[in-house]
Amino acid sequence: MSVPGLEVRDLRLARGGRVLCDGLCLALPPGGAARVTGPNGVGKSSLLRVLAGLPRADAAVTRPARVALLAEAAALDGERPLARALAFWARLDAAEDVSARVAAALAAVALAELADVPVRLLSTGQRRRAALARVIASGATLWLLDEPGNGLDRAAMLRLDTAIARHRAEGGIVVVATHQSIDLPGAIEVAL
Amino acid sequence: MIALIRRDVRRGYAGGGATLVMAFFLLVTTLFPFAIGPDARLLARVGGGVIWAAALLAALLPVERLVQPDLDSGAIDQMIVRGIGPVTIAVAKMVAHWLAFAPPLMLAAVVAAGLLDLPVERLLLVEAGLAVGTPGLAALAVATGALVAGLRGAGAIAGLVMLPLAVPLLIFGAGAIDGGVAGLKLLAALSLLLTVGAPVVAGAAIRLGVE
Image (tube, rainbow over all chains, first blue to last red; front, top):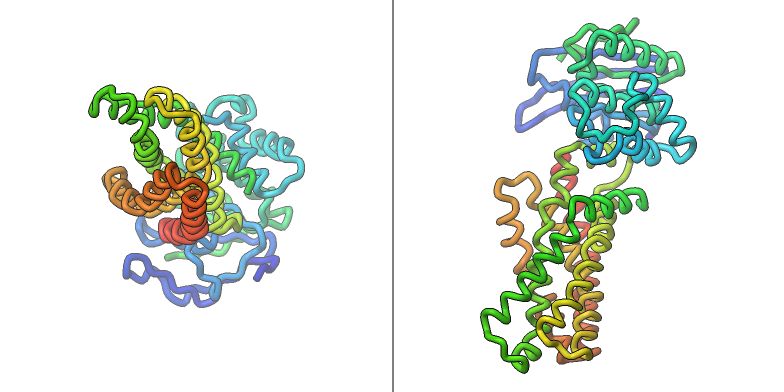
């Protein structure tokens, strides 16, 4: 079922026979944000994957129709120019204005001048920003960001904050799993 | 769906994938004249079977590159997040693999027929058989690729999984050269069965790989 907000009811999360969390509840209205914290290996990424619907947990999670996931892997074809690699995903998300959306997303992460460079030549931080551009270009309501600040420099962190703030101002929802200080005013803290 | 197919076809031909299949196929077919001697009559008689055996071995070559890289890069995760089902992904991969694999193979078979001194009417039957049988072979390759994805030594295991299942294709494919249209019909039935069954298997394997 798709709803405007994100709702998690009594979610039980187990991985490899180990229970990571039980009875997790979370409700985020449009514009809402949540920060998932906890030590390494506690299941932050697993939680985000469940929220994305990768292991199906349909009884416990109701989410908006369109979701964008920023996981550890960038999922951009290394041999393709950056803009083309992003356009592939943007086209799957929505058919209209693909190149305009990609260009705007690249500008938001300050990678516009690298649009024609093959993805495999990007540095770690640039690849992270490219993956973030994929999320921005998706136009999805719910953003699930797993350690979005990894490998980002100071300026890129600020742009990340700006992108999240703009997304929330437009009624989007953000769930961030992170150790870093990402600016999320009014966010619900989910400590695993 | 079309976007997925186009992406995989491009990746199939990129990096010399098609050339590799053709070169390997031709190498295997040239081994036989060396092994059994330059007897033109004998070669013409076994040539069709040789082409089919070589096609099977060549089909094994790209299996590791079909599913594993997309699981590693997170691309399959991203597709499923966008609501594209694992079975749809598998079907797209099968169509794309067939498009990237069958045309070079059928082209190389013409060259191989020349090397083996195969008469034209037998070559036509081989080509018809390949056209009918390669969809099944491509489907089997993707299903195998999905099943062995994530395993260590996936390439060797892929051979063990795929070749026994491909033996019926070989039997009916090579049989169609002597059996004519009736043989082709059997081959088509088998190819159809694999094409319909393999997406379900591959989809389940992809779903497991994602979870």
